Structure formats: structure tokens, C-alpha cells
Amino acid sequence: MELKQYNMQFSLPPNLTDYQSLYTSFSWERERENLDGLLQGGVNIAYEAVERHAQSPLTDTVALRFISKDRTIKNITYGNLQKLTSRFANVLNTLNISKGEAVFTLAGRIPELYIVALGALKKVAVFCPLFSVFGPEPIFQRLSRGEAKVLVTTTSFFEKKVKLILDRLPSLKYVLLTDASQHINEQVLSLPRLMEPASEHFIIPDTNPEDPALLHFTSGTTGMPKGALHVHKAVLTHYVTGKYVLDFHFGDIFWCTADPGWVTGTSYGIIAPLVNGVTSIIDEEDFDAVRWYSILEDQKVNIWYTAPTAIRRLMRMDIYPMEKYNLEHLRVILSVGEPLHAEAVLWGEKMFGKPILDNWWQTETGGIMIANFPSMDVKPGSMGKPLPGVEAAIADVTDKDFRIIQEPGKQGNLVLKKGWPSMFRTYLHDEERYKKCFRGEWYITGDLAKKDSDGYFWFVGRADDIIKTSGHMVGPFEVESILMDHVSVAEAAVIGKPDPIIGELVKAFIVLKPGITSDENLQMDIIGFARKKLGPAVAPKELAFVNELPKTRSGKILRRLLKARELGLPEGDLSTLEQP
Ligand code: AMP
Image (cartoon, rainbow, N blue to C red):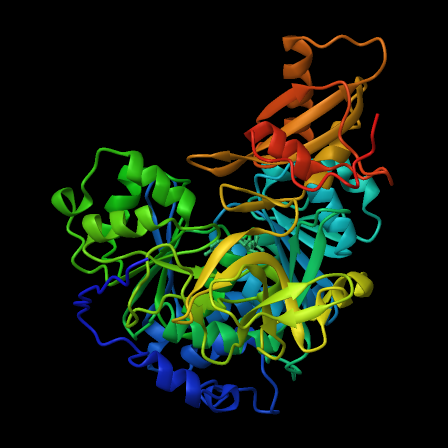
């Protein structure tokens, strides 16, 4: 691929002007000096994100600007955010929630979610956001695995999704409703009523950089979702990536379109912009091309962090944004979560006068690891180069061997050298699984990639069966388990089927119980059953009936083979296939 030289006429010089020299001279310790730290010598995410700015000239700057569905705007300054988050930290005190206990949210992008997240971090509780589109089963799995002590949600989600699983969650002490004016009973309480008398003053306790802070569930191919645990020190990655990748400058207006139910919406929808003292736009509504372009214009957004699924949707519209909207403030556009094809990068250049900068990371890494930096030449279709402070490589990984591949252009496993601050510290209650992710000094990401002779990384695919649909990870096992609960289903296997808009759609293959005949009604019934239990974001969109599923001799479903057959691709090595 030819190296495309873009003429970057940004109105501000980027924070990272010379990638190579920063990469060579970078030191995490030196960057840490740009954070304040606690008086006692610790590090607390909420202190760096809120407290220190509230005590500085930034206090009256808008930290969070919420755009509600009806487009009402609500601004919260750094000063007010300090008070609100302190109140919530004091609410947790009143409820006797201790350091390290888990506070979950299940809500859309409403102010309470952000206040709860930062208030919980002040209290050194562990914050865990759930995606509000999940159905009751994924919610139950995560609340129970994460041993949630507090869940903050809305009355509507409580009624529809939580009430029916409450008696299966013995360790959940409280459910706090954001929109209830009265307490319901001793367990289900009104958040506004608790917040009202709570003091605006809260002194953040000494926080060890290694104290747990954030829990994000991510999907595996085998077994139920894994809880990746991050520590307060992760804030250093949020700060550094905000500065060098997102290119935050004081006064910037930033819009991350991700939902905090996924890691991007927390690391970059909450923490990184606040740590860097900029203003974040938060839109409560889901994707809508016209609304999005008008938000970019009305809010004078400088930096826009979005995802390939949204970009592909915009590409299909007959809208030329620069003709219809004044987007002169837009300085940097970035994308994450799925492959951003060269075509989309070039479309961005045509539509916005600048390329869309792809970057790569995952729940386990806690922050951006590989990126196209604003000052760097972009190779459309490539994820870019490693963040300064991060060593990335391609490796041959088998059960027995591990070898870094030096030859450029060779495909292998994408691996990262341990040691960046936001690396996950464990999978909750699953240390064995955590250990399996490492070979000596190297973390194995589960992605396949290539590195070219200029040091750019190119995404190839997942090394496992995990599905990425609309940028969200879906574990086939979680879906299959629910499908198997349907009275007519004997066996189920789930794959990701390529889709031009949402990347992959969830497709299920079903073997029915003996004597049950397949028809369209049954197909609809099983899909409906899965949607009710799993929620529309996770449930299969397509379903096919089959007589049997391909399996290994040890009985493991060969999803890879199902996928190859579905797509008409070569079936590959079939030596482990159980022969009928
Ligand atoms: P998650 O943990 O849900 O954030 O998903 C992380 C996974 O998304 C990665 O392991 C990749 O498979 C995929 N991913 C993230 N960013 C990119 C990207 N820029 N290009 C290709 N795949 C990506």
C-alpha cells in the first residue's frame, strides 16, 4: 500500500509532533509528573479527573455537557462535578459500602451514570458499567460474577430487567433508582433522596496506584463473560493517550460517541477527557446521521471519537457534511473498535478534509495501544504504530512455543510487552485464565495482525470465535447457553457472519430435539426467546436449522468450520473433526 501523505492543516500543532523521537525518549515516570497525585502519595482516577481541576482555574469550565433525547442541554462544570461526585461518595458511606466493593450502573447516557462512576472512584469502590441494551440474563451474569453490592439504574430498567433476577443476587445490597422520588423498600432506594442531604465535601482516602478501580466484562469463546479488573494507576494511560492520540488541548470540545457500557465509553467517554481538562459532549440519543452532524456543528466539536459501524452508516447517506454543516472546528477524527477499512479513511478525507485516524485497543489493555497519531503519515487501513511507552510485536504462539516474528509482513498473534499502567490485573475469580494470556513478558491479545517494514500494524482478524457486532463483543458461548434453554433446542452454535454495516451479525445454527419439526414460526419463536433474555444487541439476528453441528473428537463445536461453510470459504484443517 502506497504511503499517503496528508496535508494536515490543523489549526493547532499536535501535542505529538515527532513520533519517533517521543517513542525513543518516552518515560511513564516522567509523564506521571503531569498528574497531581494525592497528598499521601497515591493516585486516584477521580482526583485526577475532577478534584484537581475543581481546585484550579478550570473550576468554572464545563466538564460534561449532556444533550438529552429532546436536545435539552445540561452543563456540569468541574466545580459542580466535584460537589456532585462527593455527594455520591458520601451516599456510599451512608450505605456502608467499603473500599473495593462493586458499584454497578445500568443506565443510558444520563448525568447520574457519570456522577456515580466518579463518586464510586472517589470512595475507592470498584465501578462497573453495564450496557443498558442487555437483557436480564447478561445483566444477571455480570452482577453475580462481579459480586455487585450496589446497582444504580432507572425505574424503567429496574422494572423490566432487574426485578425478575433480584432474588438470584444475594450479595446485591442496594438498588438505587435515579428517577424515584421515594424509597421503595429497604433495598430499593431513591438516589435523589439519598443525594439531597449528602455533604458536598469528601476527602478522597489514600489510594494505592494498584487499588482496583474499574471492572469491565468482556466476552470469551469458552465460558461466560470475563471481568477484566483495572487499577487506579490506569489513569496514566488515559492521560497520555488523551494527550498524544486524541490530541487534547485546553479549551477543546470532545465527543466520544461510545456508550459507557463498553470500555471505550468509560476510558474515553468519562476519564481521559476529564483528566486532560477538556469539555466532553454526551449525547443520550443513539445514532442518527443528521443529529450527529448537527451536534458536530452546534457544539463546535474539535475532536470526535467514533466507531466503524457509525462511519459505515454515514458513508451510506447522501450527505456531504462540509456542504451542509459548518465543521471548521473539527480538528481530529478517530475511530476504534473494529477494522476501519482504507475506503473509510479515504471517505473521511473527502468528506471532512482529514483522514479518520484508526486506533486499536481492547478491554484488557484499558486504553489505546496502537494508533495513527495526528502528526503521522496515515496508511489507510492500518491501525498505526504503538503508543510511546508500549512495545507491540507479532508472535508465533502455539501451546508449546512462543517466538517473536521479526520478518515484516508476516501474520501472527498481536502481543504487547507487559508494563503499561492500564494493563488489566486479573480476570475476576479466574486467575488461571488470566495467566494463560501471558507468555513470559508478553501479553497475548487474541488478535491476529501483521507489522510492515515501516512499523505500521495491520489487523487481520481474531484468533478465536469472538463476534464483533456493531463494535460490541459477543461471546458465542453466552448466546448458545440461552438458546439451549429453549424447550425445542437440543444444540446450538453461534458465529459472526460478515455484514456490510454492523461488521458481523450474530447467526445461530440450531439442532432441534427429536420429533420437533422446523418451520418459520419456530424460528421466530427462538429468536424472540433469545431477544427477551439476552437483549437485541446480543441475540441472534439470523437462525438456521441443521441436522448436526460439526464437532471435534472431544466434542467441541467447530464454529470456525460452520463459518467457513456459511461463507463458502476453504474448510481448512479438518483433522480434529469428528467423523459421522
Ligand atoms: P473490546 O475489548 O470489546 O474493546 O474489543 C477489543 C477487540 O476489538 C480487539 O481485540 C479487536 O479484535 C477489535 N478491535 C478494536 N479496535 C480495532 C481496530 N482499530 N481494528 C480492528 N479491530 C479492532
